[in-house]
Length: 161
Image (cartoon, rainbow, N blue to C red; front, side, top):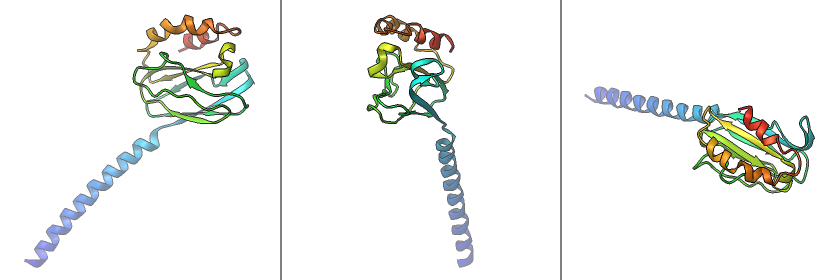
């Protein structure tokens, strides 16, 4: 009787361990499958002065985007009303790297706050959804009204999605 009880307990504990191990590996898989995209904040780049490179990032929900303060006196900040509803907004410190996790599908438009008048903007498309494009379009004229140079830059980026 004692040996039978021991075998039964051993089988149950082995089953629980295997279940726990499988659950742990699946959770680990979720965290390791997210990608990190790096965007450099630059005074001068392939597309001219005051740019994010790359200016357009395609990402998946759960990915991170790290904005690198490659050149000083830049930040990255989401533009109110130009990210998906319920998405994480951000406002990075000047001359500091910032990592943002994109948590909703849709289009995210961001800027360098002190250089927004030079259209230092960028776009992240998360998934294939363009569900918030109408919201972005409704705010586009007001944002572009603040541009002194590169007035078509944001239109070009949005048009390439």
